[in-house]
Length: 88
Image (tube, rainbow, N blue to C red):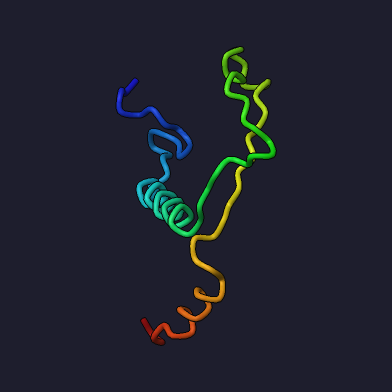
């Protein structure tokens, strides 16, 4: 088995997904845009169980709750979109 293949969601061998590099870069760009547009923080009302991973079973780990807050006020975003040049 090849050492460079460690991630299999796009298949492998002759049936590998030809656009995997484009897909990976698209995921990266979209994730970067989300982190640019929002301030992401843990929800203070539902604390994260830091010791949940110590048991070794992922089934016992409860999902954490994230809080998304916009970095730019909505009115400012609407103003920027209205002033954006057409065709750009």
